[in-house]
Image 1 (cartoon, rainbow, N blue to C red):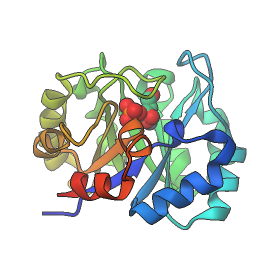
Image 2 (cartoon, helix red, strand yellow; image 1 turned 180 degrees about the vertical axis):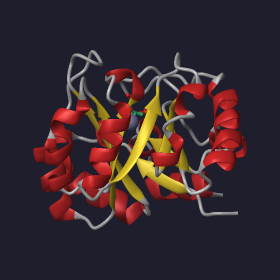
Image 3 (cartoon, rainbow, N blue to C red; image 1 turned 180 degrees about the horizontal axis):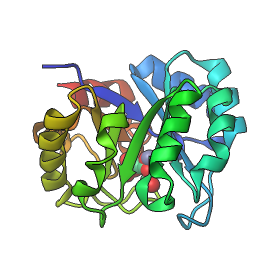
Amino acid sequence: MKNTIIAPSILSANFADMGREIDRMVQAGADWIHCDVMDGIFVPNITFGPKMIKDIRKTTSLILDVHLMITEPIRYISEFASAGADYITIQVESTDKVEETLRLIKEKGCKCGAVISPDTPVEVLRKYLPLCDLALVMSVHPGFGGQKFIENSLNKLAELKKLRDEINPNCIIEIDGGITEENVQLVKNAGAEAIVAGSAIFGSKDPKQTIVNMKL
Ligand code: DX5
Ligand code: ZN
């Protein structure tokens, strides 16, 4: 079995101490750093933009997984790519130009991914999967950390895994929202290969142990 990718979400970090927070995750054995970009329009919360990615890029060589929860993300792809993002993922609900945006991400030299919110059916991803390096199932409504895992996401993961195996075996399946040491095995068994976790890792007394447990 492939090694599970653990991607702590900096949404749960102390924004006033980001350099040290990233370092804490590197020391704890994180594989990727998940960066949640929110615009206050597509989601009710606001976080940060390309400048944060650029500054984080200087502090670590870990893969930066940039999750855009913004309206019409095509407007900002160039900026996030030159800021140093490795993966850029976009919400399929945020634009009518999903395919065009995914192509632009690739053109700018990044890996691309499509994300579905809890109310969006997996089937929507079918037409984008051939283009995607990553497909992300949101297991909470995007906007905030610390929410409860939506159980139906397990069915969605299993459905996505089938579709992915059929259409694009190289595409990584990621899950984001409400993942804890308690439910991580369930999402892995259902098909998740990359695990985003914010509060469970940043809030842990021992992030290193939490990451080890999530990788078991
Ligand atoms: C929610 C974000 C998530 C969030 C996860 O909109 O996309 O990445 O940080 O936080 P937890 O793991 O606390 O649910
Ligand atoms: Zn996210």
